[in-house]
Length: 391
Image 1: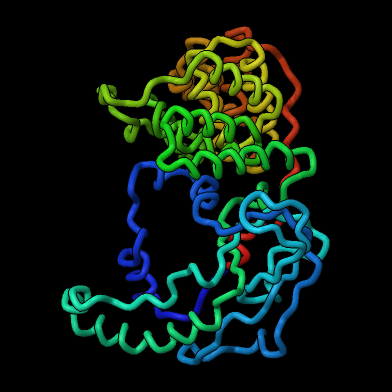
Image 2 (image 1 turned 180 degrees about the vertical axis):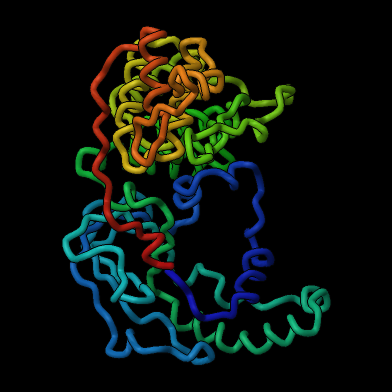
């Protein structure tokens, strides 16, 4: 949801100067779902009943006018995961014509009441003195509008979402697990600063569920992966992996403790049960690098096979081949220019767009005894990304 009640400059100042905006610990830099669970006044699973636009919502607006968000989405609450029990909610949105959902959709919504949005912030005398004159003028000009916005927003509900579409539109089969994940975050946060081990276990739980896998893996990779696979770039022939940005080998001794055997087993089982068939599978294999598991090996091969069928072949597939071969003690880089060339040194093109990656993979698979498996099933994903829809 975009807010138009203050200029960008003042909005940025609010982020850094309003009470409680500064992170108090490393957890505040963590995944979106965790942060949203902490910030939201209410979290509901709801069905969209109506999307209501004002008569002038599609007209071009004067950026200097007082035009507060008046379009709404009316939802019927199916489950309340945090906050007051409500049968239905009217959610303020900026543009109903471009709402990323339609009537009948079941959505997960993180809500803030207008009373808690810090819209009525005003700088202290000390803060005023610290601003350059042009900033003071901009703030002084915007404060009256901010006061009117605060009065208007009081008692209204605003969607503060930001999670990917997979979790915004959770499939029915995943809703119970997603509810457990979100409510466990709320419960941990209600006790004050969470125990780091409990937070780590929560991240593993997030990584177990495909629709929130991004949530756990992003933080776990940051904490634990020391040998990284850099984003590949294409040179027009084979996609080459550049390792120049890999994390140094001298990882600080204060790095977090490794995952437990039980946590690794949970990740391995989740990956084998439902791979994502995207870049997150690379991170999963990096975390499982020292965990020998035949099911993980077979699933990794199936993800590679699925990735090679995509047109064009995404860059993450090259990284997936690299980490998969590494499980067999092999070096992908050594095969570039060797396994994808004929006896005369000419590239053997077998992939879409003359990509030789499929040739390298097939040669390596035969030499290393990697099992021949069917391509992994690519999960169905929502066609609308609510984040992109609001840009």
